[in-house]
Image: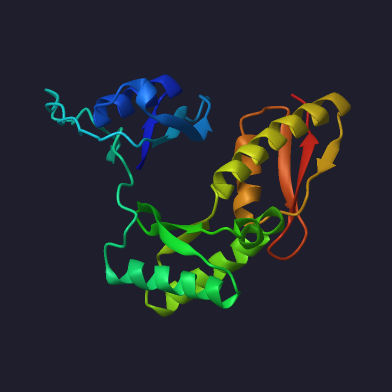
Length: 241
């Protein structure tokens, strides 16, 4: 089973996961899927994904604080609340999307099973399980992006224009995000040393946004997008202090 938790630090997020699931820390694996450092304008946080095959005994909710604010909530978002529990479709829309994505891939000539990976407000993640995952992902995720685009067009035709469909396979999206964050920091160091600029490879809008936000808090380095079309390039440049 897979669950997601958020805390101010990695340690806090792991402790929340252990308490909420009723498990010891050595009974689950942890993936860091998002991290933001403290800055003047933003509070730092760490979001983790927990994987476990152990039976889960969900802890009872803590009593409400005297102030009337539930201590498990922060700004209206459940703190330490598992965002995903059930890989099976829970309504007709999810079932239809699973069938559509599976049908697309099978018509391409590849066996696949599709399951729900995550659920959020106006967003659903679908995982593609296949022996041909490397082909479905494609070079730098372009095949996966193309399948995802078609899935979102189809969702719109079903009357769910406000719903975002995310496709993933073999945790490619997570691995790609981690790779891009490392690339952003490495490029910033090179730019700071050379006092010049570096133009990165073409990226889709989500990947460009990740580069921009990763380097947003570095005072002497700036970023801008260049080019036309969907796959633009990010230029990282030195601007001084």
